[in-house]
Length: 253
Image: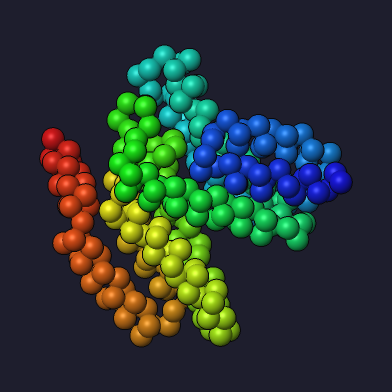
């Protein structure tokens, strides 16, 4: 039961991530309390040598160094450091799931939560329903459009290799199901709500996906097809055109 809790709390946190930051914090604190007694510290410090483990710590160190040249007061600077401190959980999560066979629980929980959020996003978009918070948008039922678009983009690029795997193994039902869900995520980002930073990292992730999972010829065809699709969506989405125009205007200002 103890080991089940150690594996379950991160999955519950992942399922809560698109909906509530408070629930994520609660589940992660509970997880840290139950995982600490199970850590073999020699093996843990060995695992910190991997780039995936020490890179989050390097980002945290950079943020702490930034406190020395900030113009804000120290209390304000330390408060701004709090979100970056969550990166401390990354090496611990990587270490734990190297020992566990239930790492896919976290992935599936996050994907399922984002699929539910995407469905609710489309419902509220067509119903033109907005939350009562300032600056609320139709199609963004919880939290904010920045978090929502980042989560949907992450789901897109997590599901893409799964789609290739199902297609290669002849699982047509799963292939079409994943393709439909990915199309829902993509169109939501292009017609409902998207963050400006997505304009920067989305092409980069497309290129990385093509390089990692496709051969050279297929990668070229894929990127050409993606460029055509993006251009077509740009012509057909008034929201996307307005978003890009505002981004360019803000950059000039």
